[in-house]
Image (cartoon, rainbow, N blue to C red; front, side, top):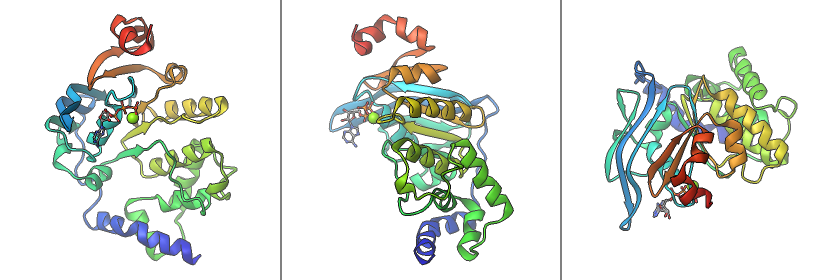
Length: 276
Ligand SMILES: Nc1ncnc2c1ncn2[C@@H]1O[C@H](COP(=O)(O)OP(=O)(O)OP(=O)(O)O)[C@@H](O)[C@H]1O
Ligand SMILES: [Mg+2]
């Protein structure tokens, strides 16, 4: 398919570059069990302090929910981790050894930090399978630029991801024909196929049916352990269904951190956030 080949070429150009420079050359050091260290972080936009002396840590393999009222700074934290926004001061380390503030967005992505935005951005005119194929990274990706056929390993990897995201039966359907929820899962699959260490997921269940929300909860909880996952979400029922540890952000700082029960009993949280 000519169109697919053209897309492959355009998408893979930066990955050829990855290959030349050896992907993930820098190994993240997590010997202390922490994957992310954010300390004394500050960001202002036109004088407005969006992030205010933020300290935020993640353990390897945890599933963390990040909640807080509109404008609390949740998306901005993700923008800073992924290199989209530069802070005014503070530090952001990936493991003990990698200073994320010294890297640009593509370099941060290559370290294995995947981000899912709210709106699904799948290739609607390609099948579910092709979407996953196109998202493969590293040397596998480079070889498929020159060679149409996928290796058995590649096929196994795609099959594994299709199973994880629950789209085995839909693999030959055009992505444009999927439901909203299925598109979201496909996009998560497109991140997973690159084997990220950390996944940042912003408002995954907005617009989903209850059935889709339940399946998304199962998917995200299944990813923890192998991946470190941060989920930003406003839907409290959903947060409760997946939450282990919850961080409440308010005016760019951590207001409270703990289990969902602890958070809901916290007076400060009730005042500013739950509106009780
Ligand atoms: N690039 C930017 N330029 C100017 N202001 C910004 C920028 N990004 C964020 N802000 C502002 O910073 C504050 C925090 O925004 P942010 O998007 O991080 O909040 P949020 O917690 O994700 O909110 P929501 O729940 O509504 O998505 C808001 O007041 C927002 O308007
Ligand atoms: Mg946001």
